[in-house]
Amino acid sequence: MVCMTGGRAVVEALIRQGVDRVFGIPGVHTMEIYDELYERRDEITHVVSRHEGGAGFMADGYARVSGRIGVCLVITGPGVTNATTALGQAYSDSSPVLLISSQNDTEHMDRDVGALHQLKDQLSVTDGCTAWTRRVLDPAEIPQAIADASEYLRTHRPQPVHIDIPTDVLEAEAEMSFDDGGRCADPFQPAPAQMKQAVEMLADAKRPLIWVGGGAAGASEEITGIAEELDAAVVMTCAGKGVVREDHPLNIGSRLRGDDERVVQDFVATGDVVLVIGSELGVVDTLGGKVNLPPRMIRVDLEAPGGDKLYRPTLQIRSDARIFCQDLLRRLREFPAEEKLGAGDSYRSEIAEVQDALDAHPSDDGGLRAIIDVMRQSLAEQDVVVCDMTMLCYRATALYPAYAPNTFLFPRGFGTLGWGLPAAIGAKMGNPGHQVVAVCGDGGLMFTVQELATAVKYRLPIAVLLMNNESYGVVDKNMCARYDRAIGCDIVNPDFVQMAESFGARGRRLEDAAELPAALNEAFSADGPTIIEFRVDF
Image (tube, rainbow, N blue to C red; front, side, top):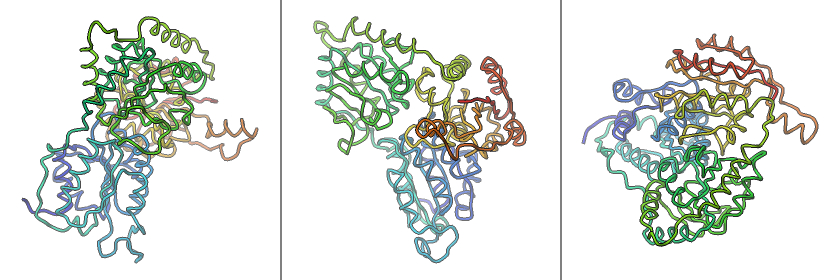
């Protein structure tokens, strides 16, 4: 037991849970935490953003590429409301983010008495975009609250959680007892009887499919092995890109939209058993439930069975993806030699035909594919592309090949405009050994452009690939298609090259995709971020 303030306990508890980086902005209500961050700066790094939403997006990007918990620190009131968009995105995409916020003194919290930064009901604000939110009213309870948050994010579907602590609790002293960070519960193990049933279903399959979501990122090697044992076709959601290499002969990619939609859907509909790993089978990924998945389904996820889902599995297994896949692969490899396992050469040939059909599709898109192809050729397999909501990224979800998990990040479910730049900052900090490219439209970049200053401050050599069409182009295109006219889509932009330079960053305007490799090399060699602008009409 040790006596300390609640604010100091926050930092001590985070360190004990293995957190070595937090994102946020200091305020008068969080000074007790920040003073301890200064004291412990050799053990835990604080990254100061220019907006609480940016801090939340950074924590999200950091968590996605590192596999660690992304921690965001904000003040009560506007700090919390600014961060809720980031929480919503992390919730939608199952990213392990922990928000720690201050609260008004216990005497004034949730009361309409005109206190600084007051919200009528702060917990209700975050309740709709977190797995859970908890208020701590005794400083001695802070270590356990943070330990519980850490355990939850490591052993459940990793949707964000929120801990709310009044200022007077942060400043009060108490005797503290700390979890040592090593007693987290084991992730859910698959039941042996369910594993036996899964093997029997897959062994009996003649046209097996594996549907891979973002929750399968930690089981890349095992899923590839399972696919090879079964001769199973692999279909990936956007979040699952790269879990199995997109140039693998069994992978038909993530092309469930656009020109390729019908080719993939028709093939998927011919399957007899589908193994779904780490995917919620949500509206976006299944075209609103219109994808005709095979009649027998094994679904593996950390999420508890039940709920109002679009698809009902034949067999629901609650398990950590990697633990399940290790067990399944072992069982498949031990399958009796006299019993044939795997769909065989004929099915593999059909998969190859689907791949050929996808590759043969014309691309004419005003130059989108040329930029995507050159970007892929310019990056190493482990380099990270962080997408914003822009036309190039929509096409890249299908056309950009990913060769490793968590190397293609996209704000898929919530679809937050402005996510790209701050998430790329977090991604670079979470994966400093590899290059990071943020792909943004002019509309989206201006939502969070202030975080360019954060990238400059921390001297991060991020390349911001900017598609500038002087418009909210996707909305404009859809309005014109439906109504033959548009409103509210034309915008006025700064000179982005000059703007970048005014921040202390670099700026470059390109005329042709062929110039991109040299521009990216220069950006990655710089001591800060670079905006690389294309003037486009898509």
